[in-house]
Length: 86
Image (cartoon, rainbow, N blue to C red):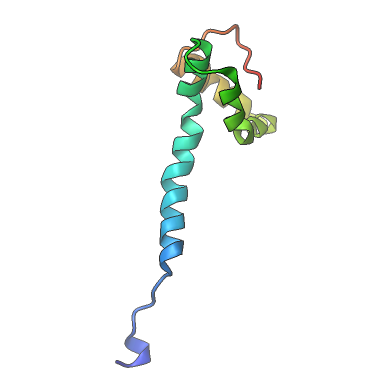
């Protein structure tokens, strides 16, 4: 086959990494809601919150803290006095 007709291929690890990031990252970020709810209700230890330290850093971005507060307190109805601390 002529080189000009060969199909360009993407390495398999690139495809797998892309899928993991495209699916895994949103699941990780959105899972903070149910985890905080379970911590608030006493089903999970508070130390579980340390898994979300990378997300906690997003709270310093203007507007991001309001989005997370809305998601946690209004979508998941967490009632812990409005204080999420790690």
